[in-house]
Amino acid sequence: MMKTILNLSIILTLFFLTISIHSQTSGWNEIAPGVWKMSTGIPEKFDLFKAAEIQPAMNALSKLGAAPFPLPPDEITTQTENGTTYLSFPLEKEEKIFGFGLNFKTVFQRGRILQLHVDHYGGTDNGRTHAPVPFYVSDRGYGVFINSSRYLTVYAGTGVRKDSPDAPEERDRNTDNNWTSQPYSDAVEILVP
Image (cartoon, rainbow, N blue to C red; front, side):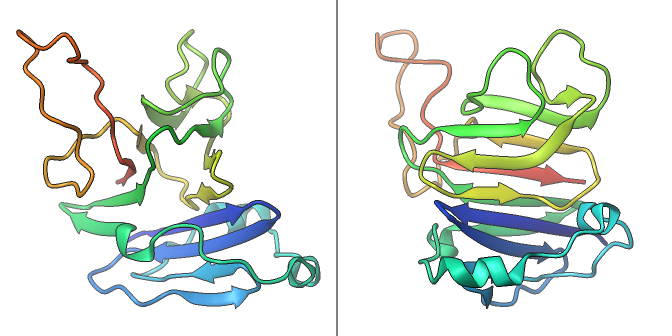
């Protein structure tokens, strides 16, 4: 089993969400002002916070004051199947996503598929660099950090599901001039092996 930790931050406030993967999901717990944690699963022995040997600055966090949870909690989903954990975070239309570590060609990540993997830079910003970081920030004022040292695959607003509550309109690519090969996606989906 594995442990995945997600951090959500809103402007001037950090939201901390922990997801350890197993079959049950507990509720959200506010562990500091504007900081939430949700756990599900058995932690791994190694994670990025342990490797960095960091502790949250609780005094500084308490000075920020309370803030609302930045996303609809019922729209954040986790599912484990065949040894892979699927994480999904809601994404609004026109919402911009930035981050995922060192990228040489763009800072905008929406509409991209990234494989966060420590590697050399092969000339394409696909997440395989010597400095991938499992962290993204939204222009809506929050961020998500996945505390996992595993190779992650990120679908930053690229996955389209018919069962989505905000699925894009179906279009015929042969007859509709508004058809696009990259329709609107309402989620950031992350696969954790």
